[in-house]
Amino acid sequence: MFTGIIQSVGAITQATPVGTDIQLAIATHQLDMEDVQLGDSIAVNGVCLTVIKLAPGQFDAHVSRETLSVTVGLDKPHPVNLEKALRLSDRLGGHLVSGHVDGVGQVVSFEPLGDCWRLNIRAPHAISKYISVKGSICINGVSLTVNSIANDIFSINLIPHTLDNTTLKSLASGHQVNLEVDQIARYVERMTLWENETPQQAGNTGQPQQ
Image (cartoon, rainbow, N blue to C red; front, side, top):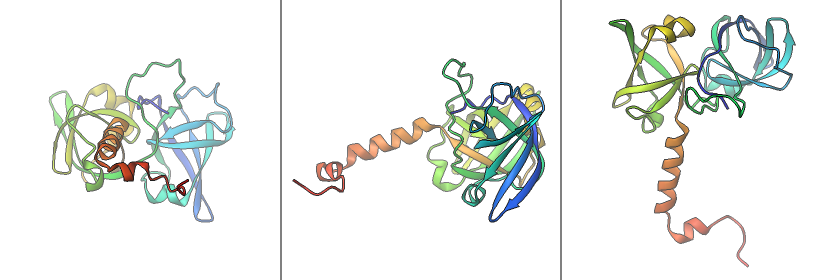
């Protein structure tokens, strides 16, 4: 689990094909790696990856073809947002983020708004129903608050601190981003579906009747 509070902007320095998969070498820059061990999880642009190799100022991660098919930004060298996995003793400054991308969105516009910037993103229709005004959403690993939504396009306001400490400042119209919706929305949907199921549906576990 993660919080969506970026701890460092690192960089993919090498993306090496391994069959249909890719092995990444990632420079950590300001990320404190003293407590990181092999097998630990680190979110890279919002995608939970496993550390398979450690070196000073760098770690390697293996990215499967399945992950590559449902995310963006993990197939070539470029700057990336980094966050280590959440500890139970940590502050939850953003919101609970799993690191499992729900869909790839597309930037519609990114324009200045006083000292801030307004970011408009078109979400895949299948996940738009989980996005609500004042709700949380994770964009390339960054926990943000939705200001408005109309059909499949939602709007975010970015403050200077967020722009200075993440890769979001490099976005432009047409760019693609990793999206993860608030987990609470998924639970609410499941609870609603469960309540609408008939007793026979709710009790059907696929096991033979005694």
